[in-house]
Length: 114
Image 1 (cartoon, helix red, strand yellow):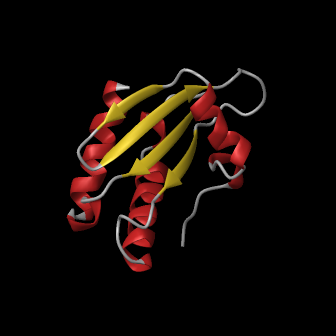
Image 2 (cartoon, one colour):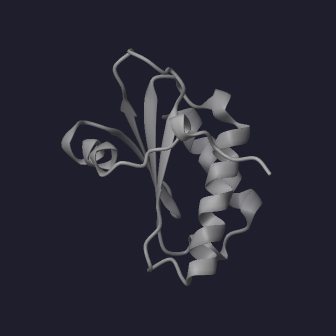
């Protein structure tokens, strides 16, 4: 089983708070919002991702499926994401009825326009 390294994940609340306090680039899709924030060019250059899924999405199984799909899309296509950037993926209601392929394609299209 493959998974993201700790250096590729946003885990601290201070990391998530930076998206509220600073200017971010945002892409609004019908099923999610993808926000991008440029980091200082010190230390690790790999892009990092944070995922937010609220209870409006559905039950726990649906929320966990969305998180798995987003993490796997990020892991397999990490070269499509800009270095020295943090990304915040916010799932919106209606994403739980989409297939994995539709979610993956939507994320990749959003990263191209960011």
